[in-house]
Image (cartoon, rainbow, N blue to C red; front, side):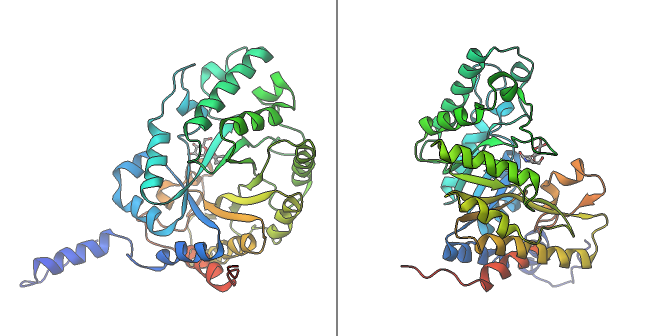
Length: 353
Ligand code: 9MR
């Protein structure tokens, strides 16, 4: 953007003008989010990447001024944490947890057992049940144990169901250990940190339907068997125009089992090019998702998947779609942020007892 500097204009004014261009609105509506979220007793979280967290002050500013919790977008996944067997890299996870603690943010741990982002030695290894069990227990014990008492909730199992349909996904764990790998991983995580809230995190369940029914049956079985399952994560990667009408209703089915729920990976992708109208509608969609969480007693919070549109997985994975987060590529708040604030401001906060 061209900046016209008039003769005689003081250096301070010029500096102020440059800052006004470079920084997101300080003290804008984003700063209302943490205050309102605290009144409701929920977290408003965001997925973070390590590099910009370390090197980009504007990125950090959005995180600390807007959100109350962080989820590591990639750096706590198996391929980052244990790239070679027995070699653990804590630099990324430590950076996220230290940053969160310095800034008074909660941390959600993501993720322990998943079919993606597994290192070659794991996905390509031909493990028998006993050895795979040992590998799983060691990874979970080291990772969860390292942050005992510091990471409040873990996505222990990520995406256990096939993309479509109602079958358990035929991943490494299922193939070698059978369906009980889920209970076993929950117990391993529980032993490593008895205070952590342990989740199954899934996508494509937000609107109810057969996949949600299958997850419900699994969750009920685990609860009945006394497994340490505490929550269900609703990933909530939505397409503009297709945000489900009754997310709260689907979440309530799970809270009736005594579980908590969370929206764990919210984004709403918009077709290119994003029009003003689409972004205005997207604001309403963000508002509705946050309202759904506030309307469910056991919903503990909403996490947005990406600090800004420049740090979103969407353009790479869904060519033709963009603008899925509440901040634009220059970290300027979008109407979606107003949607979040409106939801938090409109819904009455519970009266403290
Ligand atoms: O946002 C993550 C992206 O940077 C990675 O390339 C991708 C690799 O699989 O994983 C993305 O995060 C995923 C999350 O861990 C689980 N749910 C789906 C998310 C989007 O793919």
